[in-house]
Image (cartoon, rainbow, N blue to C red):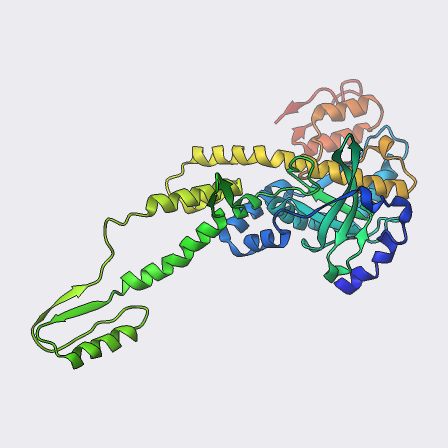
Length: 407
C-alpha cells in the first residue's frame, strides 16, 4: 500500500504545490491525544466495543441511500445521471459503510483523492496514516488561534510527505474545541483520569483486567487444592507434600497420605462480594459505547417498552451523524463531480437521501385526471382501472371514465 501512496505524493505534496503552502513558522501541529490505531485495536478486540460501533454504523448508513435533483434545473436529468454513475463507479455505498465504523469508533477517517482534477476514484487511507494535522493560526497581541487546516503529515512508513487539504477528505465528528481531530465513542474508554494527583485507570484497562482475572478465579476455586491433615507426619512426608503442591496443575490437586487425619478443601471466602464493582465497571463501559442495544441482548429482563426506548435514544445519537455525512458528501463529493462535468451544483441541488426511494402511489383519481387532460385515452383508462380491481360498466362517452363502482 505504501508503494501505491508513494507514487501519489508528488501530485499532492507541498513540494510541487507550494502555492497552497503556509510558512512553517505560522503553523500549529497537532497529533491525536490517543493514537487512532490504538482506538481501532479496542474495536477489533473487545466484543462490546465492536458490537456497539457496528450497530451505530449500521443504523447511520446501513439502510443505503438514493439521490434526488431539483426538477427546475434545465439539466437536472443529466446532473442526476452523472452523480449516480460516479456513485456506482467508486462504490460509494460500500465506502460509506466502511468509513462509518471508523468514524464512529475514533471520530476520524481520511480519504485520498487519487485524481483531484477529475474526481473519478477515492482511496481510504489507513486510520494511522496521518501522523499530525497542520493548522494555520490567527496571531494578534500574543494570541495564537488555530484557523484552518493547511496540511496532513503522513507517517514515515507512508512516505512522510505533507498532503494538501484539497487532496484529502477528512471525515470528523465530535470536534472538541479547536482541535483538528474528531473524537469517537471509544476514546473515552482509553483515557485515564487524574484528579488532584489521584489517577484513575482507563475503563478499557479495568474491564480487561477483570476479564483477565476471571479465568484464574475459576481455575483456582473450580478445582481447589485439598489438603489432608495428617497426624505425626515425618519430615520426608512433609517434603513430599511440598513438592506435590508446587508441581500441581492449574486446576488444583488432591493430596493423599495414609493414616489418621482430616480433609480441608480451600474455598473462596463468601464475604468477598465483587459483583457490585464489576457491574459498575460494565455499566460505565456501556455508557462509553453510547448505545444501549448490546445491553438488551446480554441482560435479561428488558421489556418491549425498554427496547423501544433504547431505539429512540439511539436515534437521537444517529441523526446528527447522518446529517453530517449527508452534508459532507454533497459538499465535498457531489459538488466536485458536477463541477468537473460542467454542471452547476447550486442549481442542480443534487441531494443524498437515506433509505430507499418510494415509488409514487397511483390512485384512480390520478388516472381520471390524466384522462381529462387528454394524456390517456378511454381504452387506456379502462385497462388501468380494471388492473386496480374496478369493474367498468358500458356507458356513454360522456359518462365513460367517471361512473364506476368498486366490486
